[in-house]
Image (cartoon, rainbow, N blue to C red; front, side):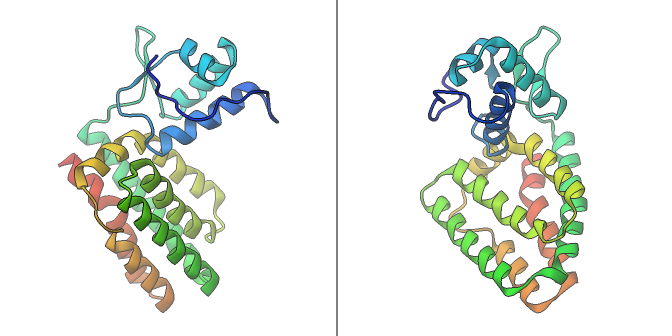
Length: 220
């Protein structure tokens, strides 16, 4: 397998099962766009990379296939999904529905400490853009959203949002390259301004635009 999975190799089993460790590591990399759309993975390659046997690798892949993070073909080939325009549109619509609701629920609990934290994360987003670090950009962009949504105190809804992020991870990497960003998303500033003002309609509009604008450009 190509060197799809970079980073430090674990030298011993940590807490939890081997397959759970591999699952979480792969899940994070897929969500953050570290693996390109349509990239092939093999159980042997995963096992070698994470120093585990075939069984934990197989279990991790099975979980990720069930979540839509990996695609298993009829021939048994495992790869990251290459999403059709229709699928991108569907996932963008899901982001708009779920994440706008999460932001709305978070608004009453948006104290100044949260707003300061969001501004700091947005500064890191800008740093990742200046470094042309696509994976770092996706990671910090999702951190911005997750930090806000945690204030909604709606764990089931947040889990649904994260599943959508997971399915979109490789596509988000492709989108980053196409957009050629040079500064943080303007909508992040509008989200923060709406939180400061307690402006729910403004927050909902800024959030909806932020999570759909780029994806719909890609689909178009």
